[in-house]
Image (cartoon, rainbow, N blue to C red; front, side, top):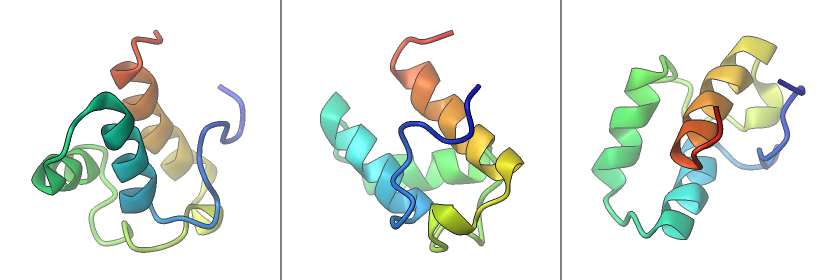
Amino acid sequence: MIEAPGLFPNMTAFENLKMKCISLGIKDDNYIHEIIELVGLKGVDKKKTKNYSFGMKQRLLYWKMKKAGIK
């Protein structure tokens, strides 16, 4: 996996996931909060992703790729 393709560095994890969910037709913000908790980013989800560690970016990207059908 490359460093962080598909993440908007000046957006938070919540905002990045919100954009992806909108593109998938998912409108429930609670779903986004569940994903944030699932990937272990609860508590840092309001931090801009440019400040995330490599591992944090990978966890966020894993969910985005999984929802897009990429293995």
